[in-house]
Image 1 (cartoon, helix red, strand yellow):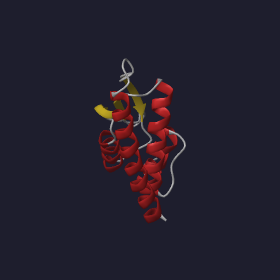
Image 2 (cartoon, rainbow, N blue to C red):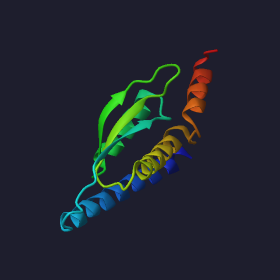
Image 3 (tube, rainbow, N blue to C red):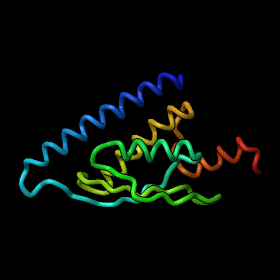
Image 4 (cartoon, rainbow, N blue to C red):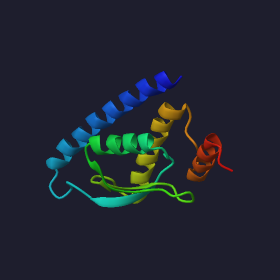
Length: 131
C-alpha cells in the first residue's frame, strides 16, 4: 500500500512543480500582481528526521515556496518549519496547501496520516516503548 502512496506522492509533487512554474510565469506578465510574499509557521505532524527532511525538500523544490528555517521539536512540541510562500492569498490558504502536502507524505511514509501533532507524538512514543 505504501508503494501506491509513494507513486501518488511523486505524481503530486510533479504536478505541484508544473503548476507552480506556470503560476510564476503567468504572474511575471501581470503588472503589479507578481508576488504577495509571506512567511508562515507550520507546526508539523512529521516527527522523524526522514519525514521532516522529505517534507522540507518537497516544499523547497516546489516553485514559489522555500523553507527558511526549521525549529527542532521537543517531547511536548512538534518540529516547526518556517516557509516563505510567494503567491498565496492568505496564511490560511498557504497552511492548507502545506498540510495537504504533509498528509500525502505521511500516507507514503506511514501508510496513513495522523490527524494532529499531539497524536503523532503519542504514536511515536508508544512505538518506541516510552511510557
